[in-house]
Image 1 (cartoon, one colour):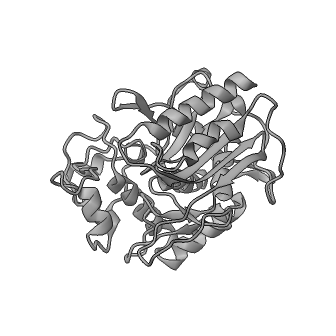
Image 2 (tube, helix red, strand yellow; image 1 turned 45 degrees about the vertical axis):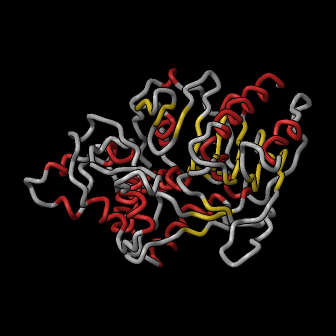
Image 3 (cartoon, helix red, strand yellow; image 1 turned 60 degrees about the horizontal axis):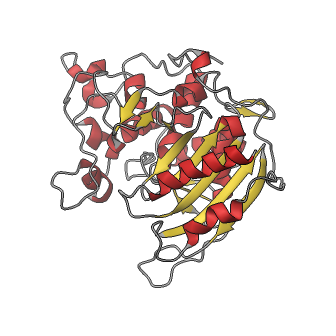
Length: 355
């Protein structure tokens, strides 16, 4: 299994804790005495509060489940929606992008993907096409230079992401791949769901589309991690819509975070190649003046080494190496409000103070 050069010195990252993702159901344990998790989580479930609806919060510490709470019902066009429990499948939105990072890591570990080789996108085959300079690394770090508008305001003018996801597009990776360059590859950062679907279609090209892709994800990623509930959403072309569509229970989302906390290690051996988690969590670009983006993961670049998978309307799988903790929150918070981000930071600070 090959390793990955994250491009960042090891001493620039907070070390990941030793050990491996435990097999089998979650073991339960009490939280540390200084952690008042009930009080820290209570504000998320206040009806009419700034968080909108919170459906699930789960916390793992040192590999054991120390807290979970569920509430509310999923939205439904057909009336009263499903009551949220520990068995409810929760939609990822962009948290799926970080799971895609793991899928690509499997191919890197097999030696089938070289991060710095040109991405073999069929629409870019012409030798004169400047997009041929786009590499896997450019795509994973959102520095491909493609002209793709990530705007979720339907009244805000052009929105490539809305057209791609909700406009009846059969091949979402192809839709994004047909966008022209707006900047030379590698020269700028621009967050793009289209980019993730280009990557996912490349994975489909390698493992087979449709049912073959789903089986590969299940056998190579979900089952080894213990994410038995995970269901990927596919487009008509047979590509997993890895920008947005993956459903799993809160406990299984917690398991995914634990995989990254443990540097991709399972009890029976390593799943992700050495350095792959560091590649994802290493800050590469500054987003909106305050958030750092790595490779399909976000990072606080703080003293605790906090990094997280982030989704529309406040979905989060947060990994804190220094606290040996994974935090999951799924719900429906109005987009554009800082409520969940502020809560996540405050939660991590409070847990650090309570140790």
